[in-house]
Image 1 (cartoon, one colour):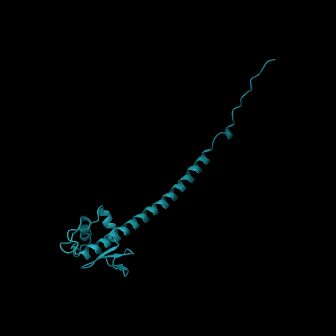
Image 2: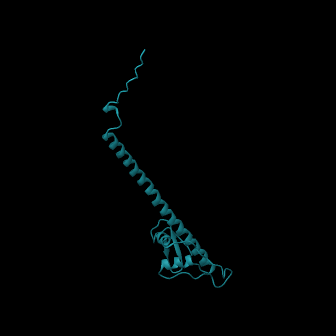
Image 3: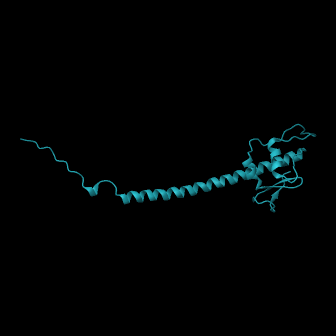
Length: 144
């Protein structure tokens, strides 16, 4: 008895792999999903930056209130940025119970100050926090 090895058949052309059209459609769908994800996550980072600026403004106004109540002289009339920079660098009352105590916001960068300034308004003796983020609104809280 003679054994005959089985014959292997080549796969037909129509059954092998994906067509060019199918691959192009898959790439297009992946591209659409990627652009939607970018828009979604891009909005989250904008929102986080807005909240960070708002929280920095609250910290600045709170420190301004505390330092002002303690008798520290840090207000630069007409210059909101210089007033905030004074708080960033540290201010200290020269007399009273808090004499020698330093009021400071360490780690506040220039871009942090720029972002926070949209929520702050400087008057003659106060640094005011504005929740809505537009200077001069009616919902301002005293900061010093």
